[in-house]
Length: 291
Image (tube, rainbow, N blue to C red; front, side, top):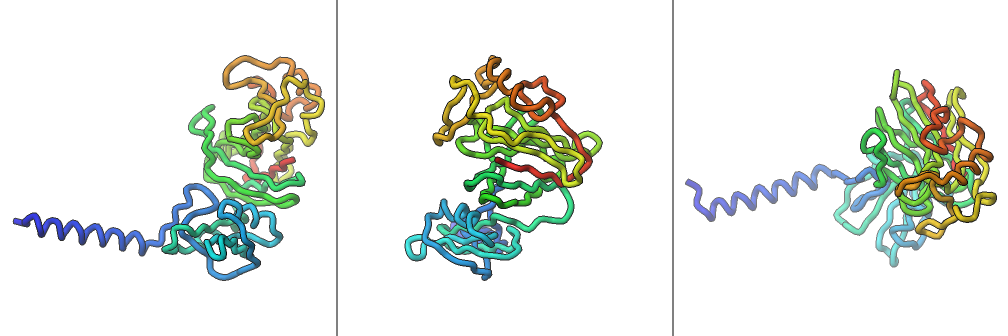
């Protein structure tokens, strides 16, 4: 029989061993993001700058040649920008819980489901990837978020069967915004995509396939000529247009009519019945231009 003291000692030993195994595994919890805590990358230093931990990823994305970064508390907070090909697997765990490491341009495999996202605007953009919770069930919790500097293109690989949307995050995920919806490995293993204005407008977008078989979307800014009553600001004060069909129900028919005159048929969902706006291709390599 094990007495209570022996049982307590045994429990402590098991807990300590479990902790040692966890530390030894070097597991870094990315949580579906391009950054994580308590991690670092070896070498490949490009430059460094004093900035907050929250601003390090954006600073790297806006710096030519920066593909990954580490942030430490040194000198009041320093972002160590790094260069060269990289993947999350190159990061190693540290014992400093305040450290942050991340990637802005993760090296991608040469095949599989890939989206090349190009920033056609003049400002740094933040793009969220929202995987659907189920059929016609959008999520408002980003699976991953990337920052893309003006004129830059970033390649992102997505899992088999990935279905959801990409959204330029000028405000909160539920704020009015243009949606770039995509479903990889759908019917007959095809890729289906569309640009949607149903949930609002915060910038033009164009989808195309790498093989040239598909192109849909538009490049014009819809805000200037829109009826003033539909012009609002999102939670960050960015100028946007309201949804054609708000989450609260109903339809803004005047806004629908305005969009019909601005976007050619088949290039954007304006109402849910615009099925001609859904396009398919056998290509697994897609491009998304964000304006």
